[in-house]
Length: 326
Image (cartoon, rainbow, N blue to C red; front, side, top):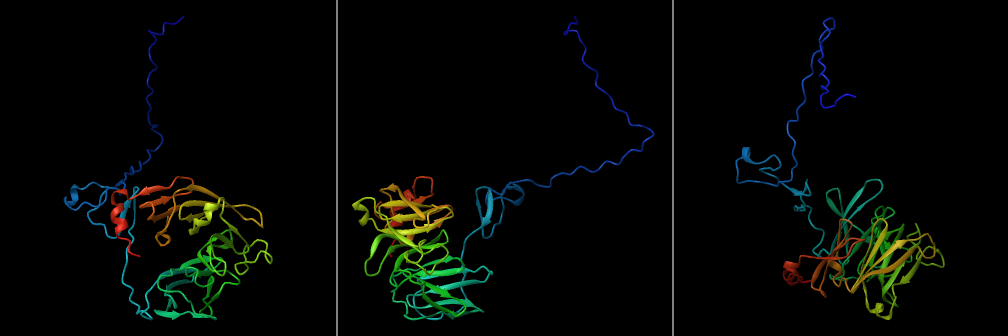
């Protein structure tokens, strides 16, 4: 039996070049000139040679967030003369499938869009819009068509950019809020002769003009009522995402998911009672969710489906509420 303590280690092999074979030229080794993440922001107090590679001395219109450099949101003067002196209520943007784009200007009774360096008027087919300066617009692009509502004062409208005219969207109802979801236009907080602030109504599947379920079974309506108290919990916003639809109410948050039933294409359910939105014009669509102001709780909330709504801006909540004037 060998004694492993006395066993000598294997000799290290030594390689020799074959003298018959020509020596191959060695390629130069590639070295990285610089490697750094631009995540240290902008440093102006030091000499440029003293700042780390991850920082810049001058950054214009950029933002450093999440280890990335992105373009900073900003503004510039719009140098096209305004077409009238009416207060602008909403600015809209529409992109068609052929890549034509339209930048729109909405006032209470007029609509214009930019083309060729000038404002082009959009005339009504029938009645002129009857809203006031406090009736906000919601603009939605669905199935290559632009649809809008003016706080439920008039029935839901659409714009024909070929004729430069706007007209009622088929037999659509009056509604304060609209969104595009599941090949439909979905409306909420329905007005008209029998208004219902808890009602959700939708067009036919791929048939935006038809809202009567007796004509198109994929159209329909559903009041979001699970208890008598829900009748007083008005819908204050509806927002369609890829696979889920968020419905904000004054005192609760609801979700809707798709289901393969023509007569009942959506499954509505409440997810967070007690947290809602009573300032519908404050809602902003953020990354994968919504952010809004709620005066009842005195908080700004952010919500992503699958998570709980979170209050943000708590240290400055008083200043935020004091700055709300409209």
